[in-house]
Length: 454
Ligand code: ADP
Ligand code: MG
Image 1 (cartoon, protein in one colour):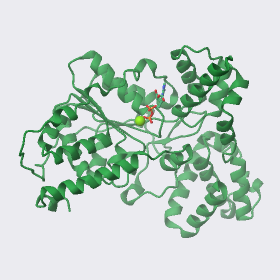
Image 2: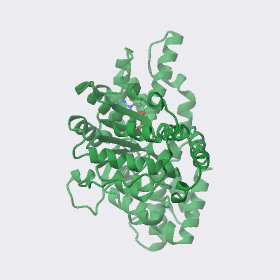
Image 3: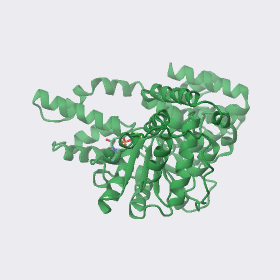
Image 4: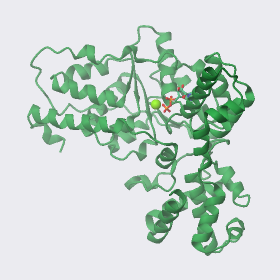
């Protein structure tokens, strides 16, 4: 259909593109709850599409709270560095653009598509707290900052919302700018790319647009999941991407999920994203959450007792943005009430948030519900019995525990009679696969989800 558009009139092309842009505007406002994020990002049971089914992640993302968060696939016998995927980039020549719009008047889009100053100066490596959950991503980002345009191109960071992807991306940009003040480093949200492209087309300035994006030293594009379903933008981006790779200019891309899992993204883009280095950013474990709170308090010149930081970190487990939000509320309350920050004050100022946390589904609740549903005993679920009538419900319960709680794989294993985390991982995969192939299991799973979450 894209090819046909080359023969369509400019007006049609622009109208079509405006549609793309409208789609963008609607998507922007989506506010994701932690539960929704978990569902979208790490739901091991979410049916994937087409060829994705065979995809076996090298590292299992662990949304859960307090424990190490990258689980290397047991099938992999490679050392931990295998969590970083690296393929030799192949240089390809971009095909000629299909839509050629004659330039009719001098255009001044240049100014409107400059984003040089868009780097957030506060997002630097110094303010980024390192933890197990972000270690790999941080190391990769630092590598790229030291050696832009070399092996790790593009650097692809993925993970749920509020985990520091944008921060890391800016940190690289800021460091590159510091090392070379003349470097043209462009940060932009993928929606901005789409909007700029539409504008350029409306102004018959698509060639300026192309020239502009291809002239950068580093291009940082955030949240590329917003390219999903926007075919024309993907095509344009594809060409830009190829040109930059060929020119050895560094690209950093972020996404809220593993690239292969983005529905509505062209295969050729998905595969190309994997040419450099793909690294997951994961939810921080307890220690890191405490360290982040202490760091943020220090930056705000607030005296935050360690005990208070610990109290907040224990309860707010979803992501760093929420953690920061909670801290800001506590600081504001302390300020308005003229009180010192302590656990009592935190309890008061975060009352509603903490109440929400309490309502979260617990593993015990899941075990009870699954046992009732299958008319078996909870002790059967926890036992070592391997008969199918027990083993299957147990696997479903484990998978649901991963899906619906913040617990890590080892924590879930413990809660199921001291099983190994690889057993839990296996259960998650098995259930996901069964949900796609076995209608009865899929139905059971759906019913249980409804029972547990409504
Ligand atoms: P994402 O892009 O993954 O949604 P952001 O990069 O916007 O997340 O991070 C959300 C907030 O949390 C930002 O204010 C960021 O500075 C902060 N943040 C995230 N991770 C860390 C970290 N490891 N250390 C310090 N601050 C962090
Ligand atoms: Mg972001």
